[in-house]
Image (cartoon, rainbow, N blue to C red; front, side, top):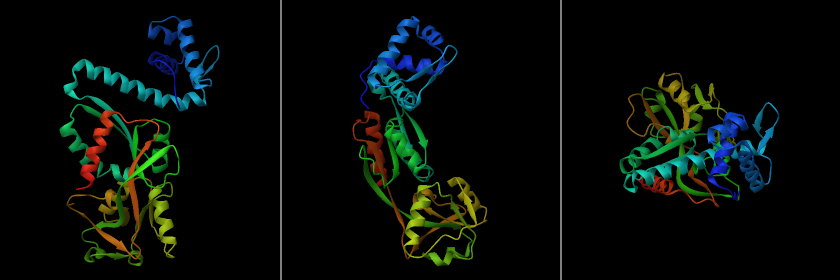
Length: 298
């Protein structure tokens, strides 16, 4: 979406939505109500669609306005952050990065990247939206985030995908579990033990089910959960075992948990960086991705 407008037009739109009133928004922006109305009309002309539903008592965004609002908020915050950085001096290297990340990469791996990045760029703030694969792709496509760390499989021609790593599924269990004695696990060895899986809304579950079906295998689960930390919590409590992507498991020595590769077949997902083809990344985001690539190659 190409928007030919001024920053103040975007501020006017955000103020009307937040305050639900042209009168209150005009007061907050210290302009007259007719001037505010002209700002909104100019933005609507640029977009080519109404952005606000107006009644005598209420103002609310239209469907197009609701779609535009997250992008406007991010643009204004990044713009204000850039002005603040200039005011404070370029040596501070300030900025804001807004990204989406699938939870299974955000839980254990991403903190290591953030720690390394923070050592070099301590004044750049990070807003991380841990979203499912589909939600993350939508957030990138709508411009709500600059980029995403996501599963491969995107078919949107407006998005690009840069593969980073192949991430195999492994078995997570307590160190005192009988299967921990094996160096590698066959899928049929999971039978007979309570299995914890994430529900079918997860992109990982869909990928796993599809790969196993080709080999006439299926997950005979006992516990189905929505969130990764619930899955690992049940495993740590000794209630079951769980099949997870390797990046979703502890990367350092854990006092209770251990992982083993699962073979015949080896099921792997590809993780990479998703971005919009038409939107260049901010300098801060480019720096973060460079650190991400360096950490991932270790």
